[in-house]
Image (cartoon, rainbow, N blue to C red; front, side, top):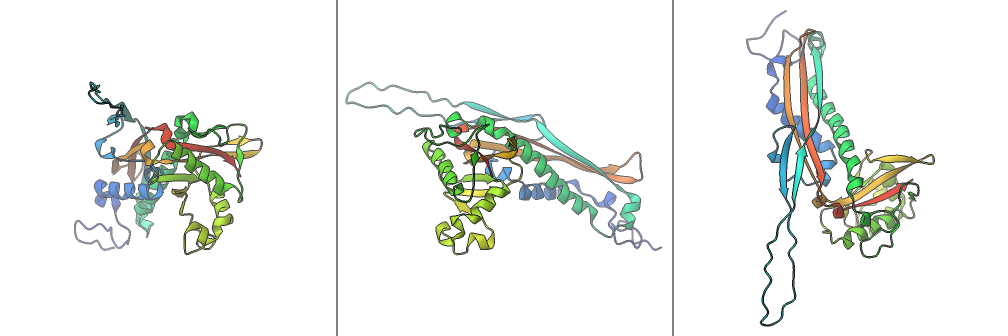
Length: 312
């Protein structure tokens, strides 16, 4: 067996890199967090303005909200009332985290002919996505204001029935577009900006859209039929995101889902891959690779989110 010059990342004639000597935490941290963002829906729907201010689990980010300015009637020669606007302080706690801890045995390292750590990085980011997205999505419904959900949704109209526990809305290909429009109406009545809106749908709801009237490309304002290319795209100012991680519950034998619409103004999220490191294992011949990702999320404006509780 021959060995290359000192410092080479290869051991003997094996084509497999000796990761324990070449693993660079900073490079892999960037790769892992990039993969996480590619896979996760939360960073796409939330604002991440404060992410650069966190350094580890237990950090607290203080967010200053925009105050509401009082507008008063004016008459000639009247004395003016002076207001001193003050904004509410919102605290974003980076108080949650997940980790992984894996070992690459020396025997497996020598015999392998693939970049195992790249595979691990991809899978770690995917598993992180599932854990963090599931945890954050589970908190959204409880923070939505009463006027944006339930049997009397609509801050002004109060005439929209959007489903609730025990009486979910039954969606099908003939009515799903109507309910997407209703979600838009709910946000309109709360004066939520039209740009930047998003809608989270389970896979079966996306399939209903593809079977609806929007299979005609002209109705979607698209030159390519949705039923042909499988793209959901935008509907009624919403960017549609498909996710299998929405909260759901059993309703007399059928699963009912929290279908959530909103604007990035209403949700803030911060996440950081806090530590990535390798070290020699103590109880086996191998190298450990482990990482810690910390995060925090908060609904900063419950009027910027809307809820449809529905079954297929």
